[in-house]
Amino acid sequence: SERLSRSNAKGERLTETQAINKSLSALVDVFTAIRTRQAHVPFRNSKLTDLLQPALSGDGKTLMVVNLSPTQESFGESLNSLRFAAQVNQCELGKPKRHMADMASPSSASSTGGSSAGRHAGGC
Image (cartoon, rainbow, N blue to C red; front, side):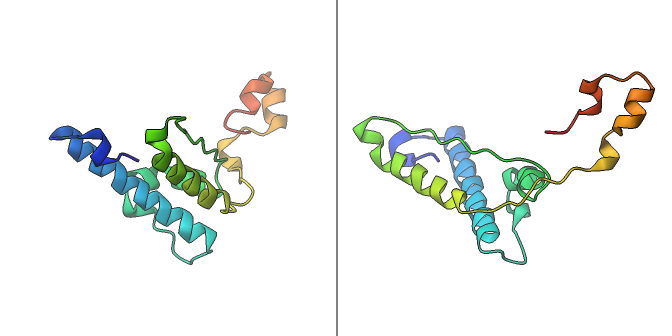
């Protein structure tokens, strides 16, 4: 997230910072809904969560990377990042599902001389 008090953003940069923070807030809402197994997951609340919907709804694998700063000035921000990561870590997304229509079957690819790379496109 972007801390306005620390970045002193103004103008266009301020608008961008506010949009980033709004998207991250929507992402927290999505992870909360997934973790608590709510019937409705608010993917459409931001462009970010809408774009991430396939990866977060069982159609892909998801990896989260947390960036921390070793400086004393960044302690609060690093702590917030770790809290967010702990919340995300509590979410169980389930096993990824493959869409078989999107993949060539191994028998048809081998009969046409297709390579193994072609047979596994879009897979793990």
